[in-house]
Length: 279
Image (cartoon, rainbow, N blue to C red):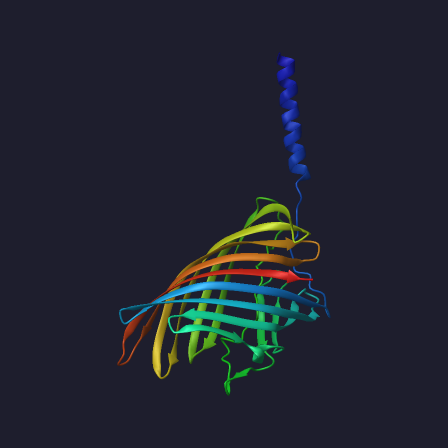
């Protein structure tokens, strides 16, 4: 009996050690190649509810875009210079005033130069081709990089490992600045095939804050709010590419105006996005 117990204990210990030793470890990094072109399909839908002067207004919106990334350069320290532009851009909105579909032809081919690290951190952005709509130039806040990638771990990871990333983004628009801060935690779940490609499945959860001020039609406004984001992305470790990213965002924001028409406008938003790599 004692011999059998010792044998079972030995087998359990062996299996545990063997499992630890064979657990795969991954070094995550983006591997965009200089001179190559990559494309992503970005589908986003959302709903927004705002209250103004005692009246509630609900709106629904969708956007369907195809984004082109041309790798302009990859530096010795693995920073990646991307030329981002839209191959197609469609927006749909529904409100009490009616439904509207807009094809943003003016955006097609207009480039924004973005420099990211091999972990996905944005170092610099520069608008190369300005966009004019309706006789006016599109604001810098509206003409941003067409998409952003998850920030990867600095250290090698295995299933069950997690890491955190904080991203602070300042948008200059409407005569002021709006600062968006995101604090996200990522966790590796394991391997999974997505769209026929062997990927690493990674989930994420986080929170965001927004604050800033600007001017609309001569009226100064202040904005502050917070939100939550969660989702999953599937990463091709070998190619160094996000294959699919699915995210859900909920936010509550207050916009306060000053001057003769002082008011506070509460805004609640829900957004669902899917980003898919197109071969």
